[in-house]
Image (cartoon, rainbow, N blue to C red; front, side):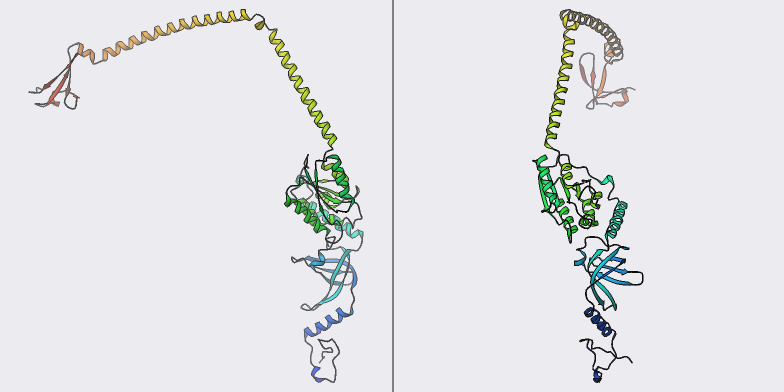
Length: 418
């Protein structure tokens, strides 16, 4: 039987003469002994390798494996350290990792607890740049249809950059010279190093929540690829993409391109060029106003000239030159139309009167009054005033009313003859 050679609490060798300590080791004791030996005897070290099995946990912790041709090493990078990264680790990337060898007791495995992580060379940064660029292009973040037009006359321009760099100085001077009425609001921001990408994202979101800014300039002066890397971070690209305010990206010099340049609504080669894109020069606006005034004046003069030509034509026309003759002719025409109207009305009235007389004659022939003229009368039973057509409708002692051509009479029925 193999006995536990170390005290699991002190990690000192057991006294072989002490029988109490002569007992089998538990798995936890062995793991704890290994943990103590590794963690106390191995110093903080740098490890170079290729990333594989990369996972970003929802907690923000990073889990991955470093491997070379012959072996592999599990790694963990806790959230408070991973937030300081200036690039996004990806599978296949060669990196340098500084950290401490620790033992995860529950799984019984040793791992590198990473303090710092950086690409093994410029080539790795360029690889990371191209990989992210391709992925975001596939998602459509660079599509022209998503790019918003810049406001033609912004009143307030927000600037996301360092308060001490040349970028804000150049932007302020150029906007102040070109359009002194435009207000510039600076949100001081980290532009390189730990936490720069997160600070840029926060600044863009703050301007969007503020809601009073018409245009954003996001950028910094020139630098190396590592110094500009904050503007190649995915979180910065997505912050620019979701911004409701149009964004001009102004990072580095003319030859420098970043992911932010591809996502932004406009890319300026330098911060100074961004300021020139943002506002129109006051002299240019004055010239434009003068041009518009001249066009309006020319247009008005053309309209006046056309109207004068029409007036001259009317003045020289026959109607105005011989106005009385024209009026007499129109009066004569009125008389002709009046005579024609009277004659037409006479014809119509004659025809209508003839038709009326014909219809009146027919109605007179059919009228019951014509029967009165021949000695007939109308008998109505009282009190219903029902017209009696047959004697059977009456009985003795009924009262009837007889209506004649002129006047009427009340009578009583004494007898009925059928």
